[in-house]
Image (cartoon, rainbow, N blue to C red; front, side, top):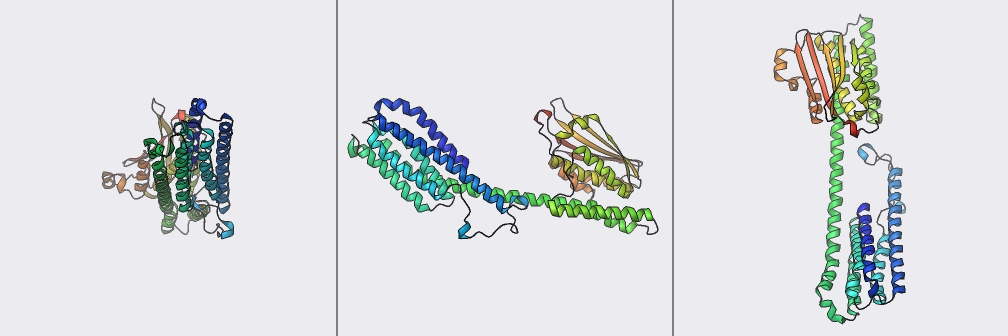
Length: 426
């Protein structure tokens, strides 16, 4: 809304600058006209400055309150609002009072400044008053009393009518079509701007609710992936452990510690692990695989090293979860403890590209009946396949006895639009 108000005022300033020089010869009192112009500029500068200061107070107030997940205030961190601590607003009562009173004053000043062509020469100031009515309509939608808008609209319309009637044309000038349009336009403008602003505010609230719901859905997806890839895997390992084997016990202990730390990090930060770039994520997963008695040989091409910054944090997060699921399956389902991880970048001539992670092992492979139904039938990989496809990527599986490849692909930014990397999300 702040931008709308300032755009209105900018439009008025442009209109005033364009039209005033053309009517200078019609002015009855050029000295008074200069004073009026100074008053208009002063009021406009005060309006812009006051709105900007109010907006900063609103931002500072929201910052002091603190915000929880999803950009919404956290009830535990939000102080109770009392009449003594009323939250600031961008368009407050002082703004409305100055704007609307100055609109009436500027119209009456036309009787002292403008000459016989008053109805035509008032055009720049009429643009200003319509902008002021528009701002008051937005302010009313933001919470200012509606009666202020109604009384002010009537006062401005009456002032405009009086100034026209006091001119050389007399009261008969009120019957002119342009004057009638101006009089009725004030009321229509106030009503439409208020209704439109309320609609936009409701739309913004609805979009905010949708954004919160989407955020919650993403959090549930992340939690489901974590429960499956880490906690679920750790609990399943308990069923297969040989209590007489110290190495298995130590490996299981390390897996349990990692799962506990990841959950604690998620509760505190909303993420399961520290943010790292793509290459760091690959090496982290290689290290974690040792807890599952899996030795992974990473092969990272120079193309990936040069383009790693183009992989966004959210993409790194998505790839890491899918990579984790693929690596867990090697010792658990393939029955082997060695795998190769090949990381590469496939680029097109137009600068677009796909980051590609390929996990290869020499295990027993997927059962033919599962392969026939596709990745969607693979409980451990189906969710990751869907999430990758939602971002334009894919999860593909090739498997025969003694050879299995799981390939993860995801589009990345074009090189020409690369922005500074903020680090990946684990």
